[in-house]
Length: 187
Image 1: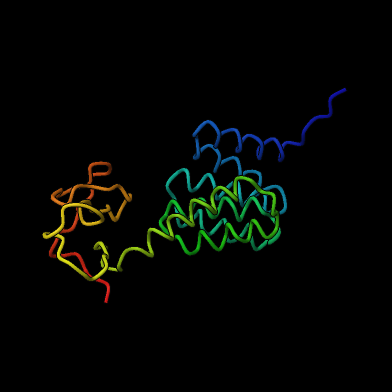
Image 2: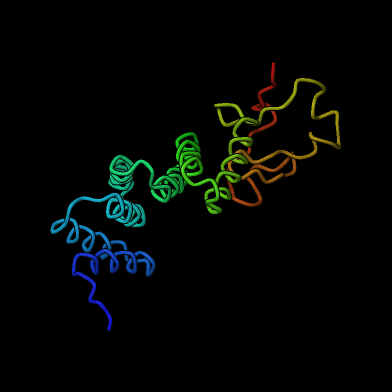
């Protein structure tokens, strides 16, 4: 004989299903209904945060993630999902901190390991660029005097794609590429 699932848990499961279907507003309504009749939980706040992020409500998502990780600091999935959202918002340092917290809690968390590797690559790319978003190159011979090697192509600061030095925009993402005069030499 199957046991009936309580209505409040049905709402939370319904919210998860709505997220999977790509219906974040439905999920938000269901989680809020769940929270109105039960005690606040890290799990519910995590689901609410994911739904808000999917709906484009970044500030509400981050607020809910902070609440989820405060209610249960040992919830690895909340830290991982928070890292995914922070990465999507371009907050690399914060994303790294959250994914490392998830891995500290659950070292075998394969999705967190994969995300950590992606974030490390982004960090390496960022280290290779200046704060002004111009390409950073080693000081030395003029690129105009060389036809091969590192001067032959220019790396896009947005996506990392290698483009011909004469290109004005990235062939992969369409971002502006700096003029050769804008390249800042490393002192």
